[in-house]
Image (cartoon, rainbow, N blue to C red; front, top):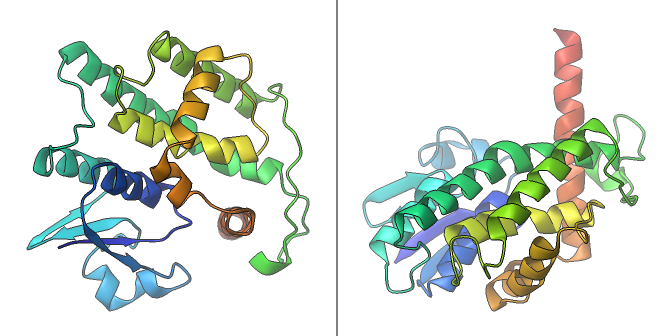
Length: 236
């Protein structure tokens, strides 16, 4: 049976988790404690870059979520998550890469903008307070540009790439819920608003969604990593 090494607070792990559920692939979940277990020799033997997810299928080990998604699609094609039309395939890939390279890279800045804590607090001591955001600062303007692009890609389609759920929907659909909870709004983007409600109502999203406590913990983890990086840079 396929084994998924992941953490439920990791949005990147969630991409693979949702794909496994959507494709009804049996798997053994193994939670990797990201407070240190990812640095132990046992896990480094699986992934020397010490991050999740990792999938092991028999003798095959696969790192990186997009590579894992491609493998699952090719290895378990019964429930297709990739269209067949060349233009639709290109759109799915393009939307995935825009999400990875442009959208998710804005998450740390959005988390930092929501921070009301004092420096050097532990994750459990950092308060969880997320203000509403208006898209008027540089990062939020970049997010607005991305949302406009995604809205254009959807157009009249139910999903990215066509009328059925695709790998692009999974990739975008694990990033936008976090942004929504960080105060980003997209009511003016009608296609995204309708698509978002359609996607998050699916059973796979419901099963893997972070509750409020888990989301607060994720945000504190991100904030702590940002502050640690800032301190490291200050020492150089």
